[in-house]
Length: 87
Image (cartoon, rainbow, N blue to C red; front, side, top):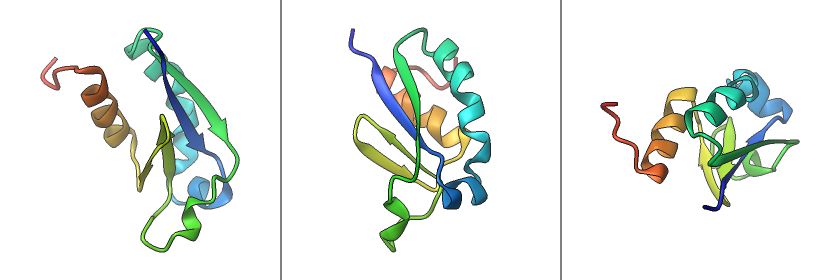
């Protein structure tokens, strides 16, 4: 099974606007998804230049999510992996 690749923007805007805690959750996510997820940090990905987007950003297999929280990341990944939210 191919791993899903998640990149967490670690640029200044993302860090200041709520993303500082996101890199810390990488180990928890890798445990939760049992080796199906590869998590990487990325210096500024440039998505904040697009006016309709709001930091912090992550990119999952090329799909950009903006204004993310730990909860919204888990919700999105649960959908991708077919996990039942009631578990």
